[in-house]
Picture (cartoon, rainbow, N blue to C red):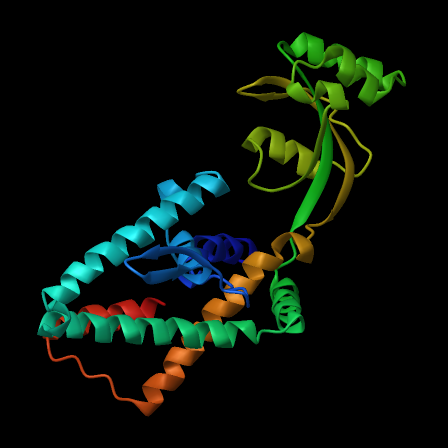
Length: 280
């Protein structure tokens, strides 16, 4: 469950990423258009909101693209003002929506900025505590083409040969350079025949008969068994933060709905909205 939430948080991260730059106190003038100054803050805002293809550009090229965009906006905006478009009902409605959207974003930024490191760690600890116990094994294997080859390797192991050295010498798997080491894995990670044999072994034991799979014949040794370990906090802290932000966002919306009644007059829209909000 925790691992699936981590994946979901990564997917949803973009929904809670606000393209708002940090403005320097010295907001220098970088250009002028018809006497109107373009400040570094204007350039930073444009850079933060460049389309994805421009975001891939080197920093210097991004700055030029952003400046070009700001200059174009300033030039055309003057023409729009001269035409009186700012007085149209459509423009005013759009500006009202944009203002509300920016207030929405500003409020969320303010709330998310107040998140404390201990809140993120507590959420991680809660998820780890709720994880069901799952066994994992640390195994090595030697993969060969024929059953006779595998039987011969088992005879050598019975005679006291070292498993790691035999894997380096005999295995045809890419893990041979590591002595056949596959690391730790849980059920569902390996092909069924391999998995069944590995989890049936005791720590330190190896298979006494070859294990056939679609890849060939395996000789398997289990180095260790333990409960599956959760991902380290440092590795998943950004994703856990996104989980906390997502939950905080839901809480903010729920609280806001207590204060203001939401009424949807269109029946189809109401049903769709209800279904959507139930799934969130």
